[in-house]
Length: 207
Length: 207
DNA sequence: TTTCTTTTTGGCCGCATGGCCAAAAAATAG
DNA sequence: CTATTTTTTGGCCATGCGGCCAAAAAGAAA
Image (cartoon, rainbow over all chains, first blue to last red; front, side, top):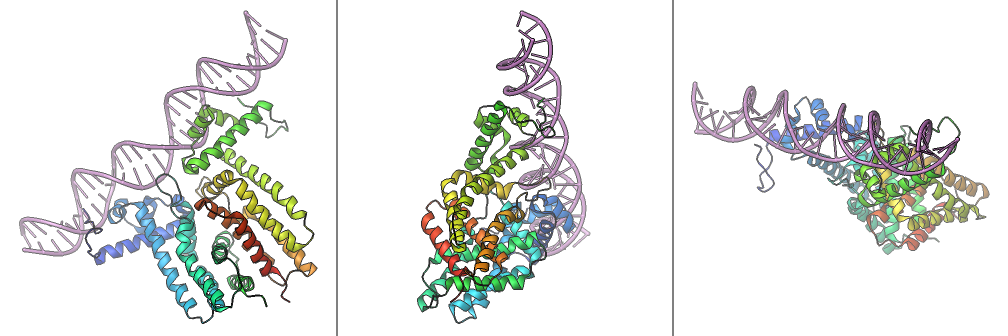
């Protein structure tokens, strides 16, 4: 019986951490390869060269495993994008940096992102509802919205709903993910630049 | 045995058309209510007050039923949006009309659209891949792209990638759908105006 | 009424999956 | 080496659904 660590503040053992990591990695690979719907525990276990029960042993459920993938990705993405935007001194620079860094992150993590996009649409609660939705994007959209508010405060940006703009930016960046998964000839650099230019014009105070 | 009408060009009988219509309507209701994942043939049949087999009798498969819903919605949406954009004389006006008409269509068909969004993410092929993807949006994006090209030709619009802009517009409009499904206090009119203004600035030739 | 066609019924079947468990094996402690 | 705990194994099971079918019912034709 694996000890539950939820209640106790105990850390995971080295072995357990390694196993969880391995399983998460294999799950990502399998999902990216055959799709979430076909990524059964059996298949993931096979990929890892272990028996199905091991996954159940280290994870309370399949849901916990998938959630772990999502959380990992969120942390990694934030770690990549945040410092790049914070390095900027102007709001316009930050917005551009946010867009370009996001696209760059997608480009350099295509496998992960492909899996993640599939998870996004497939991960469901017991009653079949999407487990991941806009609400899970609010945090990220807040980052954008704060940049926009800053720009309006400094007078760099014109007057517009920061909420609508933030949602639109997020949707635009998500579009890269979707395009990337559908076509494999996407020119990331050009696309990122176009997108950044687009929102630069959309936000700038008109002279 | 229901006669196959695929090969023969024969029209559907009055009765059959009515039944298909009723089943489609009930399917939409059930999907909007309990979600695609829980919308089993049994549940849809129950809603319609008929037995499960009737659906199998009038539709070759569940997939055909769902596809019918999608097709109907596409036709209805196009019928609503297209004339409104074509009524405009300038490219900028057309773009604005496209955005506002799309949002208005979503607002006035919330139940259908909620169901459709769920179908969009849930409808899968036998091997678990999404049946609906960007590729199914290309047609609609082409409409937008043509408006953009027109505007560039007339000199109303500045220089930008019409492809990127079209994708971004489409994503932005889809965002309304997503927001609408997640929150029920969306101010459609304000949102539509903000969005139209946003893309007006993004497309206008800078003076 | 009789005959033939269309439509409906209700139940059965196969299938795949996630969770579970008892027992074996491996690691660790004493 | 023995005792105890952690980890792994491999198989079993319940579940829900779409598709299918034979037979019943309803309807149309004669």
